[in-house]
Amino acid sequence: RRTGLTTLDNGFVNTASTRSAITFIDGDQGILRYRGYPIEELAQGSTYLETAWLLIHGELPSASELEEFDARIRRHTLLHEDMRRFFAALPHTAHPMTVLSSGISALSTYYEDSLSVHDPAQVEAATIRLLAKLPVIAAYAHKKTLGQAFLYPDNSLSFVDNFLKLNFGTNAEPYEVDPVLSKALERLLILHEDHEQNASASTVRLVGSTEANMFVSVAAGIAALSGPLHGGANEAVLTMLAKIRDSGEGVEKFVERVKKKEEGVRLMGFGHRVYKSYDPRAKLVKESADEVLDSLGVTDPLLDLARELEQIALEDDYFIERRLYPNVDFYTGVLYKAMGFPPRMFTVLFAIGRLPGWIAHWREANGDPTTKIGRPQQLYTGPHERHLTR
Ligand code: CMC
Image (tube, rainbow, N blue to C red):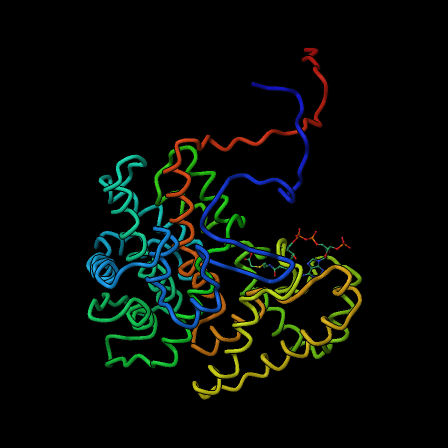
């Protein structure tokens, strides 16, 4: 029923699109909880897969549920061999985020038996397949940029270790996973697992509201995440830091340009639609940055530059008045770089982290009989009726 009472909420600043029981955020106090559990506790004491289960099912798994979940995911890591031809057809310059989103769409064509929105067994199969195979596609996207051979997954390894081996192992020599690297990556992935109705989760929900399958809904979420105002910010932060270093202009001058709003100049990794105080995830990443770089034996002047930039911004009226603080993307790039990932892989790592959240949102929306197809209204600003005069 059209009432004619459409109100404009540009960018959905003040409109709830759904009810959700998955994630709670208090942006003023910097609180983030998954299903009631504070992010700090999960980052410290959980694993990626345990937290994924929590997000998807609403409760922590029992030991046997977690074991079974982990085993099922390990069993599904192989990609169809024909997918190699898919990767072969792409240029080595392809951005890994595009490889990932198109790879996930392509993957759906192999699984006609898990595309149903209504059959719980098929929904479960799609969940397992996505969790198992998305990291493999992600690693292949990385190998493609390096021009190295793809490795087969090693199912004797944990989720994170398998992913590291797929990225950094070669066929030429044995690869030992560094436990420091593994722990740090696991923690970063947990921090990214969900963030309520952000642009990509909202995209997944909107696409899913048409009863499109889980694979293509997630592919659309990856596309939404790729933009520099969303997940792409982690790559953009590193590009920004490197530019400041290489130009020699200095941090103060750069901040002045940001404040003058020079075209295309923003302090990437700063600001957030919801957090008007320090992003709790950024706090955790910052805390572990030193520790991780130390354990990996890496020194990176870009980390010092990031700290200097943060300090100046946090004391500057422009940022104080607008309540702009570092967000999760500000320090993650420095860590990913220390782990050996190229900047173009940073947002892909975010996508692996965010996958359980997307799945949880898709399932929550499609499991709710009151969900309606998402269909925003508009305020029409075009011409009045006119006619061809020919
Ligand atoms: N640098 C400089 N000024 C900024 C920034 C920034 N990073 N962010 C916001 N502002 C200013 C903006 O110009 C505006 O100023 P004014 O009131 O004078 O017009 C004011 O702050 C409010 O900004 P907004 O653009 O209306 O805020 P928003 O809620 O629409 O945008 C945001 C949020 C995250 C897109 C934005 O803060 C931004 O572009 N940040 C940089 C990109 C970034 O780091 N994104 C990652 C977000 S967190 C992880 C994720 O979602 O993936």
